[in-house]
Image (cartoon, rainbow, N blue to C red; front, side, top):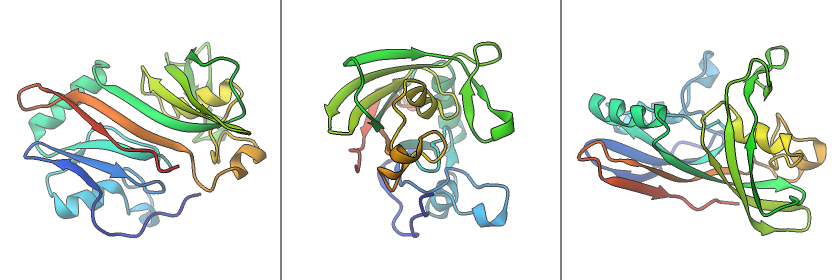
Length: 214
């Protein structure tokens, strides 16, 4: 739904001998799709400038924000383990439809693929895998609310499905938002604002932040 941005300077937030931190634009795949028309992606653009760069985690195509790539095999393994063991800290900013009833809360609803409607996911209390999202209101508007979302798990479309489950879909969401919420924004209003992890060289706590562009 959101056109891939034209190639230009790689959006580098930080780089050293071990890691490459980028501010991914909305509309760009993290990794290439199966068909030739989906070959353009953040990974291929990064490899053009940093040939050893590899993807450790992913953001949805229409989600923007902070993503870390490894520049060595050791860095990939080190940070990958942190994601697997839920030792990283992530915070997203979203604009959602309507006004939430309270200032904060938690969604604890298991998710599974909605096979007849792929690539959609859905809440499935029988076959779903555990998915937990903490949320907090940061700003209230006339028809929408800005929220900070802190996922404790990393399921596909987790934040999008969980906010839809609450009855407050993310603006511009072409998979889970009804027509009014979809039309309220020309992009998916979901941005990976903050990522914390231990640096693979020495283990120092490292934090990167990118302000939401909406």
